[in-house]
Length: 429
Ligand code: IMP
Image (cartoon, rainbow, N blue to C red):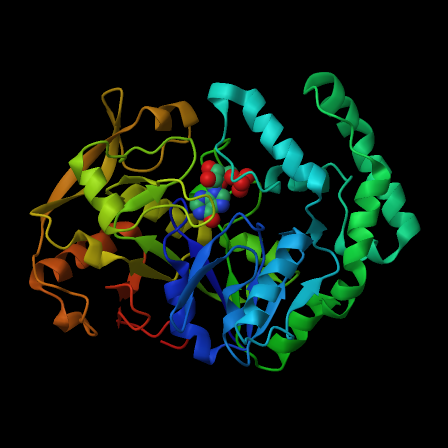
């Protein structure tokens, strides 16, 4: 039955958790299909608030089977830390399943992530430093370590030797660091094997059987469209497929199975790390959005760059992912602004672009063409139906819907879990 994908439509941190929460009681499986512990969602359990980076958010919902599929890169130490933290808070994490084909982030990937960023200087990507890029680079370069390799010491040793052969030359001769010892890496990875073993399975088969049996499966994309390695603002992207297509390759499920593609889009825009961002604000409006929206990174604590809503980006995301429904988040953050500018197109050296320029350099110096919408002052956090919203807020949403390439099916209106206005059912409607 339904396979649903959730993807970020901007540069991440759109509040995907809100949509997942909304659906959670109707889900049987939640699958993380890309990225690693570079993601971050803040979770509130009782009075306690903490951040999850690697585990799919489905781990929090009783009855849901959380799955880490083949497209993910797994830092096993972080995996165990997060599982321990949840267990200490009384959660049952025993249902987690991890793909035998997922790749492992080893200590040398973290080292290389940090030294390469330092070496890039002004051209740095602003990565999270978690070893994500180097782990995916090894995967594509065919010198990666997969979860299943941990269960065969001989194979593991051969693969670690292969992975370190070139890297040690690079670390010692170029970056002036000490060489990494094969024995140390093998010993560390082997030390995880026994605890990991019961969690490991053929997740592609598992998900296929679940769908055949009529279960509801949610594929939860990490990062976002504009950070996708193919479709984002390359090279200022993450190293995985964060768009809807990634749900198929990253989990081993046929693309035709994916029925509903939900794009999460914030009522304004944020980004962490380097790279182009046409609507970025450097004035008091930027400070207002950052402070009011608590726009500080969950993973790194960095202040997020902020800007107005960018309709060409939403349209692009709708096209690249085949978005069937948008969830518009954080509309309440705009409350109190006298007028709200929305970017409707770009000006590139005097030429109007209604869609994203294909040439990256053009995008780097694109300036937004804005249309202004009247704001509202009423508190909207208690709104639960579209009619509860003030007229100007309704008009803002309808205007965004008209320019963003798909219907807006739900609207986040506050930090509370139930602070959401649903216009169309995200599973059936
Ligand atoms: P990496 O994923 O650590 O390699 O970082 C590459 C780029 O993606 C950097 O600009 C990061 O700030 C950004 N990034 C990675 N994960 C997230 C996320 O979950 N939210 C927002 N930005 C992210």
